[in-house]
Image (tube, rainbow, N blue to C red; front, side):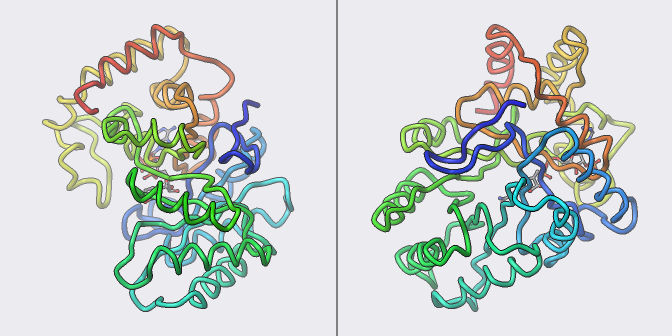
Length: 313
Ligand SMILES: NC(=O)c1ccc[n+]([C@@H]2O[C@H](COP(=O)([O-])OP(=O)(O)OC[C@H]3O[C@@H](n4cnc5c(N)ncnc54)[C@H](OP(=O)(O)O)[C@@H]3O)[C@@H](O)[C@H]2O)c1
């Protein structure tokens, strides 16, 4: 199984991770109605059986339920997996102590003694300074509560600042988790991909299937349930605009005997220092997404996809 490293000194993990926002989330994803614990447990088992070692969650997903489910599922796989979670800067958390308390709560839900990757979910500095936040995270590393530190949704400047503050404590910034797919490539234009390579920060690509749009299963006659139904990109006009990308995905899928999702993920895997973390609600989705590994688009095919998706830069 192809592996990539998280930052310059972090663990080596499978070159695809599994995102678990939908595990326990009723509001956006409809957990508990169209699918439930049986399905996500099967997704976890299928992913682990296929060699996936990286699982991404957050304290806010399902108000803790995603962490609780992942904690229960991973209990049989001590130390072989890399569990990544996120801390949300909600306003009443003003001191270093509150960060450490949030970590202990996540440890308890995840049923583990240490968190492999702890990420700051969004940039914020209005109530807690970057200095205070990253000092608290450095303390957590020194106490062994967390192993590596990451950020999420950080701009180039914010990422550089986080990197610098952690470096002062002798700790590398391991990852920046950002929205990145064939139809969300703004981070390239903003210089984030180049800056991350420069700093040796791994990019975890979230929503790498554009929440299902790049799988080809949604069409004018087939809309998603729940919150995505009101997303303009899933409406007939939005889907039509994606045709240059989805048509090429379909063509390349046929050439390689793969699915469109696997081709879309393979394009991300081909990007240096990038690990996609597609969500999977079922064993079938997990298995299909892991199938983006073990083969490669040619250099020309990667370039052709980059060209077709240039309007989304
Ligand atoms: N840091 C952040 O701010 C942030 C934000 C968003 C997400 N994330 C992380 O990134 C992960 C992934 O992002 P995401 O869930 O937003 O989007 P995504 O991975 O692009 O899409 C996931 C959704 O696509 C569908 N799907 C997945 N695999 C499929 C397959 N093989 N065939 C057909 N449909 C498939 C499923 O929904 P349906 O079956 O219902 O279509 C699934 O829930 C999250 O779980 C989370 O860990 C982080």
